[in-house]
Amino acid sequence: MEDKPLRSRQWFGKKGKDGFIYRAWMKNQGIPAHQLQGKPVIGICNTWSELTPCNAHFRELAQSVKNGIYEAGGYPVEFPVMSLGETLVKPTAMLYRNLVSMDVEESIRANPLDGVVLLCGCDKTTPALVMGACSVNIPTIVVSGGAMLTGKYRGRDIGTSDIWRFFADHQTGQMNDEDLYTAEACMARSQGHCAVMGTASTMACMVESLGLSLAENAAIPAADSRRKVLAHLSGNRIVDMVRKDLKPSDILTRQAFENAITVNAAIGGSTNFIIHLLAIAGRIGIDLNMDDFNTSARKIPLLANLQPSGKYFMEDFYYAGGLPALMKELHEQLNSDAITVSGHPISRNYENSECFNRDLIAPVDNPFNPTAGITVLKGNLCQNGAVIKPSAASTALMRHTGKAVVFENIEDFNHRINDPALDVDKDSVLVLKNAGPKGYPGMPEVGNMLIPKKLADQGVTDMVRISDGRMSGTGFGTVVLHVSPEAAIGGTLAIVQDGDMIKLDVPAGTLHLEVSDEEIAERKSKLVLNNNISKRGYTHLYQTHVEQAHLGADLDFLKGSSGSEVLRDSH
Ligand code: FES
Ligand code: MG
Image 1 (spheres, rainbow, N blue to C red):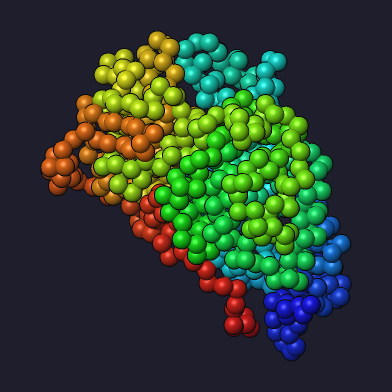
Image 2: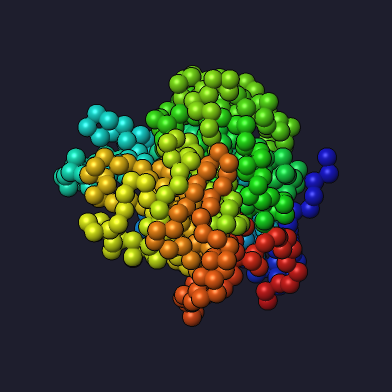
């Protein structure tokens, strides 16, 4: 087998002044000369940061990857990229996903790398790294950081989805401040990302079902030593991938994307999946659109009994057999010959796996819930689409018509939602504007708005809520998200008024504002757009180039790939 010449030789293999410069400074790290004499150079793209608690264990994980790379005859080089934690970053980590993708893309291309291992964990770190790597397209493998151990609070299993319950209970007096403070210490009790099927776990399942990671990557807990074994084996594997020149574009075919959509439905994955997968497809040049999510996932039932759609946690999922056991159930629905980073068909990932807990991974002929996936809605309120996750919503509200109670922005919502005089009842539809990509900016996770206190006191736990924002993958409720076009660019959402009737019909896939076309046109003609565009810096770049949610909210000029070639030297 003829190996392709290594890309890194364009640096370390050079003669004369350039080669001297490229090698000499590396040697200050104690690198013996033979490391630079033709071994595959593997970058470990690390999102380690103490400001991203979900990824704070990644230096240890990187060491395991390095061990595997050395063992396979490669030369590992770890490098940092901007990291994004969901919990601390304001106004929302989503604002910076595209910025990180640029950091990753340029770092890979500019450096003497033959292959790259992406260390991904907290929500945005996965799509950002995959997007960036796709735009260079050298051999790439993903190692996810793994979920936290299940939280334990006063004899109860808890995880991130309980935050929403805790605050509902606090609002109605069933929990006091002291209880909350105790729960806070009980929830995040080990390294790793959110322990439910939130966005981080959804992303880990996405990379495994796309074929971008080794089997079992999705569910091994962060604290389980087998996570390090997987990292080590991924280090082994990337060296081979370089030798075979197995690139993301060989793996990320249309079939791979369909597999990811099918699996996401069966696991009850986050609504954020849709935005990130569309953005990744845009980078690798696969024509994917919102309708594909309805088509590919229509007949897929919910198999995983995991929070927020069910009761178990990611740790339990691993012990039940993990993603391979679930994918085995879906064999008939999957494109089983899609190639993965292993070089083998994806069926190899799951054909010998076993399920150890049928209450957690249901068989396809007796699913946990026949309704699954993300339903894409269309209608005059969202011409380009909106999304809802039926498995996390209330059955009774799947077909609902109600009077709009409108909030112009999140401040307006926070200010008035608990006003006893607010004209709202359990059948009202809460509408939040200006939480979209351009309007907020960055499309924050505010779509699962709190229920007004006076209704919560009466025992109301769910209402139809509509916005152009997102919600945390750990959230739940009858929440319509990602309305496109967003209010800030003059979408129909912008002209909704208090008292308008809104009709949601999830089975029919529609969302309709019961106002005549003439009246909508009339209101739009009078609309003054709130032109809140930042004057400088990255936010300016973002707001002037971000695409709408239905296209993946990438920056328009980042679509596609610029390849890996760099022709000029630096000195
Ligand atoms: Fe990082 Fe949930 S906050 S995964
Ligand atoms: Mg999140």
